[in-house]
Image (cartoon, rainbow, N blue to C red):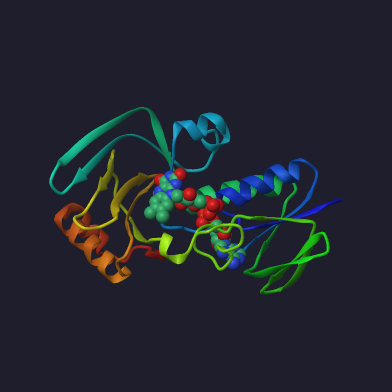
Length: 238
Ligand SMILES: Cc1cc2nc3c(=O)[nH]c(=O)nc-3n(C[C@H](O)[C@H](O)[C@H](O)COP(=O)(O)OP(=O)(O)OC[C@H]3O[C@@H](n4cnc5c(N)ncnc54)[C@H](O)[C@@H]3O)c2cc1C
């Protein structure tokens, strides 16, 4: 039986692994964190969940949201209403659900960091923190922030942006997207089951500057600030 190593167990890797395992290949997912709370809105569009119904038909906690307030410094706010809701998950919950599906399909899962990979004959040797794995084929699905970014893509660190955010133990019915002066990026407030995901992403600014912008925004939105200043669950990632 052919062996496929899937490097990265985020949505792309977990989904690929589920399909490969269902097709009868020995499939091994290698991920250093497995399900984790990546800084991300966590919203799944109708286009995605209508094509992959398991993204909405499941027991995983989720929030269905139709309204978004898009706001920019000089143009004010615009309310956008969707005819089909966005389904919003905590990323830890979403990734966990997708990894469980891959495992149920027969994929093996190993929590380890991939250090590199080498061509050996017609296959691959994958070097991990815990040893070596031989595979006939590899799927590289390690996302934007990883040392394997160079394998098969032209992306560089300059193409990425910082993103950082918090869980805020509050509820609101709509999404906020706030654009900011002189920033290629935005602040997001995404309602989820039991909390808000509040964060900022941007290019060409340090994480410290972005954090200060986010704090000014949450201060302006007084109701949020009162709660956001409590110890939340901070994430920080590039
Ligand atoms: C601020 C922000 C908001 C976003 N909001 C949304 C949204 O609302 N809806 C939406 O659909 N998308 C959103 N996205 C995009 C979404 O996060 C990505 O498209 C998605 O996570 C990509 O999935 P992936 O599986 O390719 O990569 P990732 O989710 O990044 O997964 C990669 C996996 O690889 C692992 N990994 C990396 N390097 C190694 C290594 N060396 N060894 C072992 N494991 C490794 C990581 O631990 C991770 O689990 C947002 C992104 C950002 C930054």
